[in-house]
Length: 382
Image (cartoon, rainbow, N blue to C red):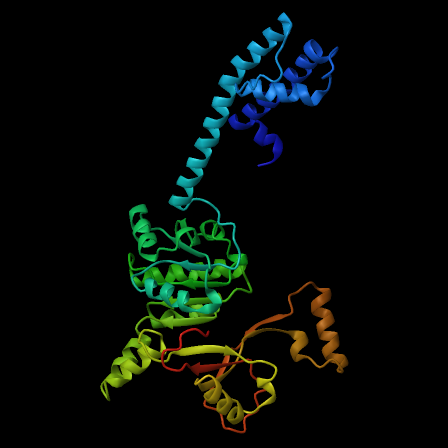
């Protein structure tokens, strides 16, 4: 809405009328009362107009002439109606804005937030896990779903995030609804299976959602949950970075429990559910990259008590320039053809890669981070 359109609204007309009355009363009071006096300046006239219009009446400036008193009476009578209407409209707008936010009808205007599309009973565990990560402390959470207002209120009560929690109400497969969550400036996006619809429909909506998200936010990582394994490839083609099939991990976990039930306790601790050491992500420093795996593991065990278990290469966006040879005339010709025709030279995201328990002689220069098991009781590093 531009300024001209805003002036045509009821609130805009009230502001314009109030400003006009202030201006007219300022000039009128100056002409009738102050023109010939020692206090002849517009600032005094403007001050009188404000205190008279708002019916405060400090009494430091009072009209001495009959025309001035008539002007004062008119300003006071007009001010009672205008100021009351103005403050009433402002209060009404604030209440309406709060109601729209509660109903999930407003566009979210934040950045570096986490978006969850869809909702199910396991989503509470996802949020709890995010809250334990130091890198995401005090993050804003946006939930996009079509749940009823009472259900959203229950979720807000259980999560207890206060002003850090935002809802966008609507279907997760509608681009207009997703756009209100401001996905372009999000930090991470999760697409979950919805419990209130059939599995086939839930997967279809997840695919549509990821397609829309990839158009709006091509560089934001998208992690998706899928109900039926056969839809995994469709979701990957839509643009999801990682896909988790519901039940995939729990089924294998139960199989491992058949060997020994201690397997469950071990994995629960890794995921931060237990009370022992858990799996943490540790970025590599420049000093770390000058060492090999054996040296770095020994140092971490001695200093932090942490046990490194894997080395990671983070995912990165590749382009033709990354894979073509700059010294090759043919490669340069191909790149120029793409650029001159206006075509995108991006090849998509490569990685991430994880190497479990590398050899001691493995150089760390090529890796970006480590996965480590923290010392028992140490939950302060992420």
